[in-house]
Image (cartoon, rainbow, N blue to C red; front, side):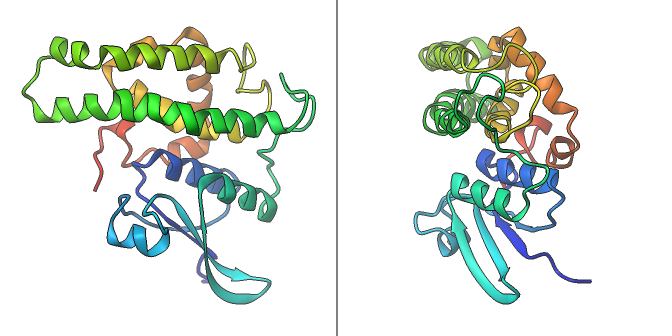
Length: 228
């Protein structure tokens, strides 16, 4: 059996790693996965700043290589190029878009503002405090209340840039969905998931029906996992 041409460096617990594995799975591209946490020796071996994920490309133009491609948006663009169907790229005029680049604008919103608001502000402090077991739920809520307020503001703004129904941009699944979903799947797994609006809950229900979502669910916060 021919080994996969790609290896993903990153734990399934990593939201950006899951974005990439979602896309590879959705496109039917086989890959190996090295399940390491950020800032580990292996992470630094593959990424100059120790972040996740890295996509290791083992073959290019029929030649054996071990090219390391870092940063999720760069990896996403490469995946769409080598596996163009089913496409995850929005065209001019799809959904709410006027120009195709609005999809990448949305992706940037999620990475630059969503990750800090969801993960750093709320999810990680909630999980850490819950696992430590020294604070009551009410005390945890009071501690993270300012961050939850900031998260509400982010969710309101991001929803305003989504189509009123369907995927982020309407009928067509895109990278916008695959970047947003892992963050909100983590949020839904904690009590603060109660702040998700009916539109976002409905969108997540639609995403849950994707085969790629089910196949990448193991070892994520949504099933109660913790980092390795």
